[in-house]
Image (tube, rainbow, N blue to C red; front, top):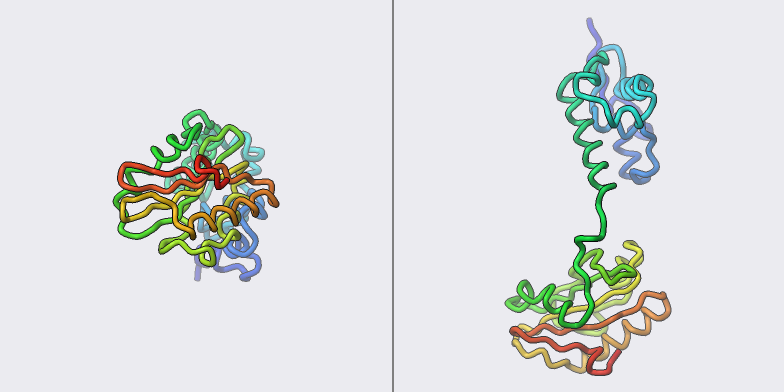
Length: 229
């Protein structure tokens, strides 16, 4: 009886690329293991890891593989059109990510810029949303994240959650924003307490809190302009 096709799941769990990626992170995997995840299955004679190694050997590594055509890749026994397309799609995504620049990122130069960035999506919210904009050294928005939803309270808005993403993104600074569903952006005592707490934590971490904006109905308040930062 012919042996069945070798698949990733046929390997011991601690040797499976998918499990290693989940447990240790994608950066810990070799090129061979990453390719094996894309290929998913080997052939009746070769495991998927052996097939991925053969592919790398044929193209002398990723440098030549990135410029290969579907026709060139499918000359390798065990790799059909579907597998070749998966590989080329992954390589093209990598190329596009390498070409990404910060030129198209939104730049925050003033409290008005920050308010404009979120006004249309936040002014109609029926609950308070606490949002952070994480910026690079050029004040370009690297990432926007909703930290929590609900009434603002100094004990709920924990600096750990706010600055965790800043550290992850290597952000130079951040802007905190939350909305008042009433439409009145006047700061409450809790708003001011939260702002002061986050400002102090930012100073300790070296990640500046540039502003805390409160969004109302087509208007906003900057706690920096009010002198609380």
